[in-house]
Image (cartoon, rainbow, N blue to C red):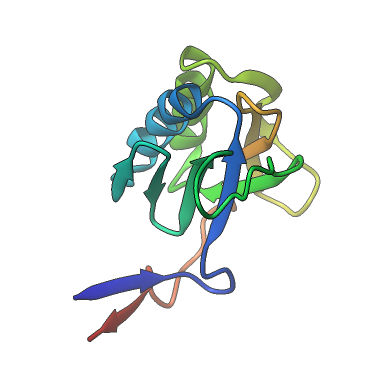
Length: 139
């Protein structure tokens, strides 16, 4: 068994009102990012380190999460643009069209609101060299 982990966050869980609407929205975004849905059941689905469940799931305890900001890494500007288009087509709302931001030179991002009002970003940080794509854990 192998797992791939990023730099800081091990996993995140969002508890949503309408699981089917969230599955359509995030499924469209994951397709653009090249991230497969890892699994799903009646009350949740997950991809990479993001778990999304309904309020009646065992882990949620009947409580919806509040508004969050999640930023996904994109390979290039074209991926940011495609992410924005796919999110809008899958029921998301525009919260900032693709474009340069002032955070640092080369920061190119877009923002969408998911069906629960979470602020979902795709960002390309500009041309840079990574030491590795991901951390691989083997068991």
